[in-house]
Image (cartoon, rainbow, N blue to C red; front, side, top):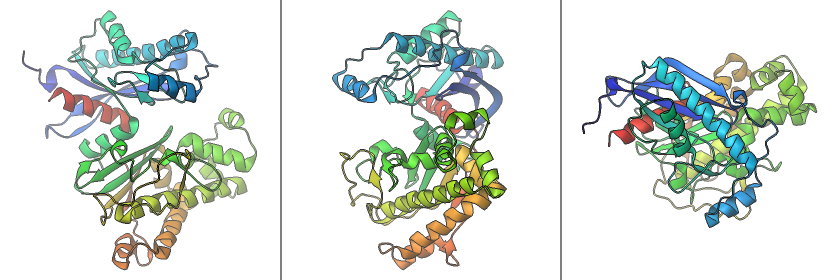
Length: 403
């Protein structure tokens, strides 16, 4: 049976977040290997589904990891109920897009947080939600009940970090296009890391022996570096400085953009927040630069004290980044006028100082990253992609279908 052409079905990308699911119809452009988001979008909060448990607490992560290792996942009653609301939310979003796409058969790609099952179609460990080891099978059952024809089974649940990289590589406005080596840091619900090396996408899971993910690092304040890239993390840092609870900040709708505006207008706690963020983000970016060139200098410690130290030797040594991309909400913030004033300029200054003072980077490499003794602001760019994880998920499904 011949596979159908793109015009005969609807390509859908799904991003399953911490509190809601977001989906888009993806356009495959005439250039074949170029994609972008269509105008058609749907999203739904998990809390909108009957049965959702607002007070849900995940099973202890150590228990989850132990059961995962033994391949004996024992779901609690609450996980079963909560998981059902997550999967029902996704089914409703796909149904909306199925209608918007003209009721054609669908091809679906999905990105979700958490550790995936051996077949990559379920989740068997997750920090902030229910385990759903049969996620794809249960979702497909719901779609069948709605008479939604699928072009193929959902081939896997991918990670939002990897899908950000896929989006940047294949999207018409992707920042991985036309270059050889680049690092992507996306700051949304969490921190997403992606790499392009020698013109190819390189998942972080393949290079964990010599480069660590952002969430694995901690600073001298015993905080994960993810706190300084994610929206909730920035809010947490401000909470520490201001003495206001996260709950009160949420009730007052004070999020990173509002905190930046407070800093711009002279609020001391907000100013200290972004001063701290600029310091540790600069350290993270320097860690990336120095690790690519000569192997990790070990300037950042690990959350997990038992994590293997990073190897200094790797096959990409002596290379430099053509581009460092900041994406998602962190990128939007840093690209804004107020964000430049309270965060971006300070980050550039800190990063310039770290490169100037480096004892491991030779002069020619320092000159690659510096311009007139300041960090070369042409190297750091802010992603123009909307909803990068959903876009990457759809692209991944399309590429897998074409094999």
